[in-house]
Image 1 (cartoon, rainbow, N blue to C red):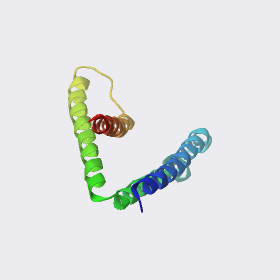
Image 2: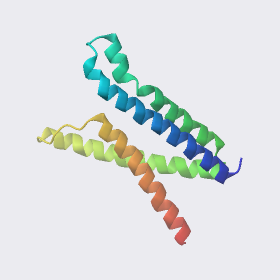
Image 3: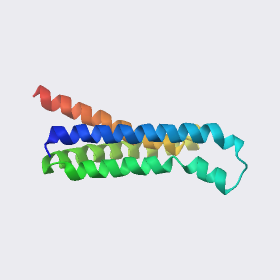
Length: 130
């Protein structure tokens, strides 16, 4: 499969799973309070994990479709995003000791994905400008 076709397929799959994720989050948020505490409520609240796992599977499939150069380049970007997130998390952990508010793990996830995206965009822009 050509790189452009693989990328188009990846974005279709990713946005479909992202749409499912948003749907599951919305439904679980709306109905969670109306369900009594217990296993059913826990399952409802945890249900967005299913489309999140589909997103993971979509990302793994895309890495398998990439040629070797693009795979290495993408993994380097992910590694840089993870390093940035680790440095931020460690620094912020010390700031929490001084009284800063505790951050949710959702913030960590957003930071690693956001930094991966920003790094990918910056490196793409740099390569095109050379």
